[in-house]
Length: 180
Image (cartoon, one colour):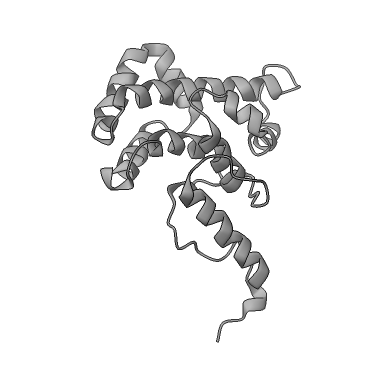
């Protein structure tokens, strides 16, 4: 028999299997997912593309470093992977520019100068506002909603994108709060 009193909505596995769920502890990766999921069907091997890219560039810093050395080569590699998912050149550009904007936003929010203290950085990464997320290259309502839901664990704020899966996911999470 299941002891439901020891469960919380955070411990129950989602029936949706959303890619963003895998990266809820990594805000930059959640935003990267939104680039590749935008105007794409998961059946187009989006998961494989994202995992290969994240293996090569595990952080925004690694993307920006390589892009600063040879942005054209970085974009060509991303394009070669993303092409089958559609909008390959747009996604390649967005991968690099989103990473730059993300790091720039974090740096401007740091109050201790140009050195980014890891504890302070984590605090900032998990507390971006909807408007701040939308200022990052290629991040619109869908990215802001994904950040709000998966990173901030905010299931009460309205969903502003037209993504029916995000709406269904939030409704499911809200229903768990009533049950558990």
